[in-house]
Image (cartoon, rainbow, N blue to C red; front, side, top):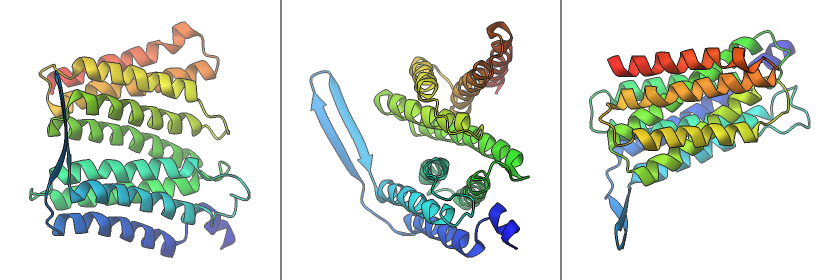
Length: 270
């Protein structure tokens, strides 16, 4: 019994956490609220940022996720005196990213589908993060692969949503930098060590932000835009892992180059 508990979280705690987060998004769908736009007008520059109830509820849901994951992971028998902060990052980011497509689908008949998919992703991320607290568990490799896949999927979903919403460049670029940096930071930390690759994460975020800024004015569909940026994020992360493992540079760049090429070819033909 104790051995099983070391692998999986308390069902009661996980259920309360997931239900609280989903209730937050459901209330956003049910409650009508006025739209407020913050504006700043300067010579040659006009800033407009719309604020709705969904904006506040997404932030609230992200805060709830961070607090809930802290509560959930502290119950892990293997955590001890170690910090659990790395296990809060991806679930919080998952909740925050969920708010973007749900806001766009608020008046659509497929909102419920997006809601269910988001719930499944959130449950998977919370379970995966709990399992990875103990790298010696048999499920660690599967949980690591699952978290990595979800992280890249979140990046693709966020970019597709931002492109679809017509986000302006001054909002798009910082969002790409922040999310790409955080996702790469978490993936690189999933090697089971306590090493945080901040230089690589910052560099990957900057490269993705620059590519996103360059592609912003191209006539790309939302999916094409997302694929064109997810490919470089994946490739640069793989490259950093190969270099950390002392793989010769000439060999290390082959895989990432193929990944970027395939992602861009897929973007062209979609």
